[in-house]
Amino acid sequence: MGEVDPSFIQPLEHRPKPYPIEADNIPVIDLSPLKAPLPPPPDLVAEIGGACRKWGFFQVINHGVPSKLRESIESASREFFALPQEEKLKVGRDKGNPFGYYDSEHTKNVRDWKQVFDFAVVDPIVFPSSHEPDDVHLIELCNKWPPNRPQFREACEEHTGEMEKLAFKLLELIALSLGLPKDRLINGFFENQTSRVRLNYYPPCPAPHLALGVGRHKDTGVLTILAQDDVAGLEVKRKTDGEWILVKPNPDAYIVNVGDIIQVWSNDKYESVEHRAVVNSEKERLSIPYFLYPSHYTWIEPLEELINVENTAKFKAYNWGKFRATRNRGNFDKLDVENIQISHFRI
Ligand SMILES: O=C(O)CCC(=O)C(=O)O
Image 1 (cartoon, rainbow, N blue to C red):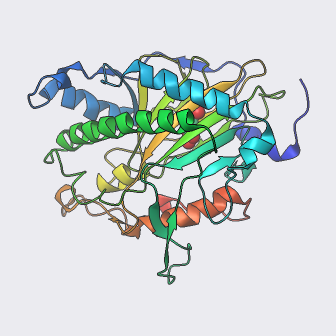
Image 2: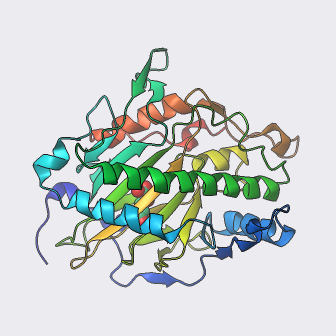
Image 3: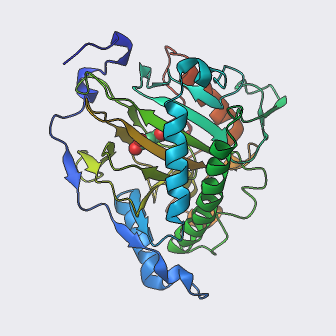
């Protein structure tokens, strides 16, 4: 095996196992009952609730997203990442604006073996201008679309529209599974949503036993919906025993995971679970996560309906925009401090 720059090398305990365990038990949930103009059937709601509780991850099939749109965003992404580096750098991300192309992101302060292109779902988004708690200034952040590539932008936007519809359907099911009204996790949180989409491109890696495509992490947002191509790479930490489980690609499925915000809203009933992406020495891999994020001014705290004297709030309220601004800073630079986590707000 070849050499890689030391910045990519994971500490021993976080390196991938040579023979990963392939998951056959991450729940696959059929959403076809949602096609009928009726309330979702209770067994579907219970299936979603069970998956959120036991795994924090599940896959959905018959989700209603046209396969044509998924194929278009995948081929547009492949074309983009195949461009010469100087072309990609024309839309390079910088310290002030986290959108665009970037190839040196760090997760937990180790460099990821990947290239990414990020864009906001609502363009421009309004965001705190800094992570400093007392700085009340806001900025507008705009997407950086590659010039002269209208098909790329169109493919990204069309697929994202479908992701948004699917995300809100899933939020209704999750709310019902928590015994809440179906719009409880939607109303009031997304008027100025800060959701984003990432195109992840993992080139073949000469030392896949030392590096990771994305280091272990939990997602900070409400929920994530991920499309992966036919090359396996996503590993999920199984809650029962802490083993890393490789999620077998299914071209008809999207992979959904609960983010930190649902963990806080549900007061730990549904946990946000660690995951990572492994790379391989032969094949490139593509994945496309859609991260559903609320308005920047949202205060995240356990929902009052889900706490009581026996189950008191386990988290202090935190401001989403400031939380995210702090995290973005750590993802851009290798910092000597741990990235901000919801555990910092645990009571
Ligand atoms: O590529 C994958 O399967 C996982 C991607 C991911 O977790 C991320 O981009 O945050």
